[in-house]
Amino acid sequence: MILLIYAILLLVLWIGITILLLINTRKILFLKDLSPKLSVAPSVAIIIAVKDEEKELEDALQTVCSLSYPNYRIIVVNDRSTDGTAAILQRMAARHPLITTITIDELPLGWMGKNHALYKGYCASSEDWLLFTDADVKFAPQALEKAMHYIKQKQLDHLTALAEITSPSSLFVSVMNVFAIMLDIKLKPWTISDPASPSSMGVGAFNLVKRSAYEKAGTHLMISLRPDDDLKLGERIKRAGGKQDILYGEKEISLAWYSSLPAFVNGLMKNMYSVYNYRFLEAMSTAILSFLILALPVPLFLSSGAPYHWIGLAIIASQVVLLYGKKGIHAKWWHALMIPFAGLIMVYIIIQSTLLTEHLRGINWRNSFYPLSELRKQL
Image (tube, rainbow, N blue to C red; front, side):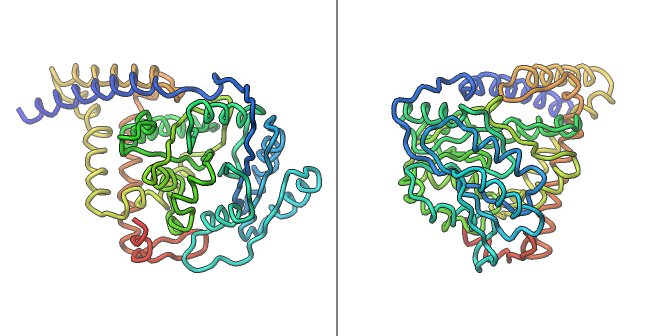
């Protein structure tokens, strides 16, 4: 009887998740579909923090230099790089007068490197708008123009865009699609434009914010020790009364986030606990729910007799519909069969990140150790 109740609840839940996401993600527009027509072009400083980025930097930075927007400059902050990043920046700056470079040799106490670099970029700017982005993000020529047109149309203070993720690993892409579904459920991005909604969002690949709104939110000074600085920046802007919205960046903004599944796991391991504000019970509860909703149901039901295997097949059918129909991702039919595996991966990341941080009483981030007691001060 308990198993039957669990099976029925999970089927209803997955049908509900499918309907919820299919309907609501349709409310988020594609940047590629927007008009680039802009009568007035406010000044924009594009601020990029780089550390040991020689592999992707030159190609990505070239796309930033090729933007069609008429009123912008680029501030690249080299944060203690030890590879060929400095030479690339020197060569690029000589070719492109739009580029200003800042070199950081030492990280002050109370800062994480990227947050400090972005803050120093802000300090070196005077433009009306700030676009915080990453060193491996590639832009289509009209991306900024379209984004600013949308901002003016909607009278926004902050616009974030979900970059198109490219990867040669089909396995990583299948897991990434499940990760995107989890983020949608947790963050409800279609609600962030509603001032009455507590939901907020920020994306490291594209955080375009009005200077006055950024300053009102306290700048990166207030999130100096947050590994999830992009999310927290969006949260602080929303709390300070800023009007924000989100777009899908497909065809306009892209990055090769991780080249493989192990790289994805290692990358998320560093900051997953911070998503739960270093609250042990919240993180572990999420891990348990993820196991019960994502990893366990289908294998359990398919290995059981009737009617459970029919319920398992119905859940798979719902997941196929979700993956095919959800806006903002590109999925193949077999990605639905990977959901239990992806669920286990996410459970592992959450638990391992939580236990490791608690065991070490802090995190190691880019050759620096940050005590948990200090990290918890910026909740």
